[in-house]
Length: 289
Length: 262
Image (cartoon, rainbow over the protein chains, first blue to last red):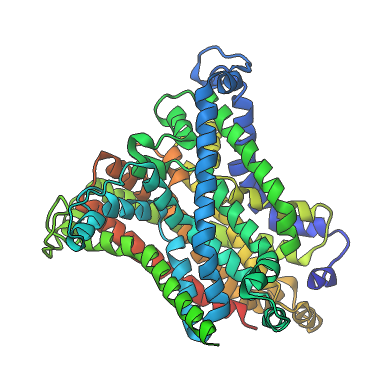
């Protein structure tokens, strides 16, 4: 920040504008105007371009509130988001702790990279890879039946647990990353001080480590919860017929049913939910930065 | 102390278990692309037929070509516009700067489902419609904030005195930028570019809503194929994608690490 004020000058905007304008113009045309247009369309009976007559209406929102289906699905998606986030905390936090406090030097660097790497690879492909593992007669099925003396039938494919597994696999690196960053910043001497003053491991964890790493946990939770609530590809592939969620219904409005105004209203409601969640998380996040 | 040692070893084992959870499905998926059975049946029988048959699949090849073209153009546009914007945000002080910086986060934080459907509605409304151009517009907008964030992070390590020094030695603004600032932030620019390429090449959701049957990208084509049924060809193309994107990210990590050191 100090560097910025050093080069500060009057009329900064005039000089900055030519450099910034193209980037922000692009974001306006491709992100901000579309989001505004979506809000606008959500109050229409039909698309003005389709040639059919259209009018302003609250009907799309009325549909959301009058048909319990949409609300049920939104709640199902929120529950899915919550469950996936919890699993990511349970699985990711201990791993982040080991990375930050147990492993050192090159092995830490290498393992950290290995954890983060799949996160940046294609999400669709990773979900597909779980289909290979979970389907009946798939690897999990075959492996377990080869090891176990009795015959069992693992048919996780096209079920709610399959969706959870796939999503946790997709998002757990996020949790490891954010928690690792905050855990690493905790001074080891604080932990040693707590221990030498007679606190048990569990007490140090509860009173020192978890509170200090809270920003990482919240950041990870927000970064996972938000996209999971809006997910549709993962439930479609791994959930089959049980994979109907709020996101898949929005997808349907745009690619199958072609009720775009209703889809826009549903999208906008989701956006409102997302913004509320980010607003709740932001005080903790701001403290972290 | 003994307890500490045991706990540490348990921790190490745990991390390896997590790595197994992360990688085993991908490895299995890749192995199945070399298995002869079209129904993924074991015992394993080595073949590269599925890769060979990819070359016969014109639809897939044209989608791959589209994906590469869009990713390359997205990278170039994002690097140029993103670096320029980062420099402006770094150099100048003005009202509303905080707001402009905050505006970079909605594109990252809002689920792609919402952004994608909003783009579909808007592009349709203003007559751009769907297709490769619409996909390009969308990809650049999604990747641009990442590039600005990455390049700005690198700029934070830059000493503004260097620009002052060059200026006092008689260099004009263009020379200062070209010879002093750009070389310094180059690792950040390269990392940002690789990031943009990855965001575009792996992008599915937004491309899905903006594509038409003839004008589509590889992930969209794969999604359509998966929904028709699983075939080893999907494994083959998926294996190629995962290898490419992981290699790309290893490269990014290299540059980013060098970028982090002073």
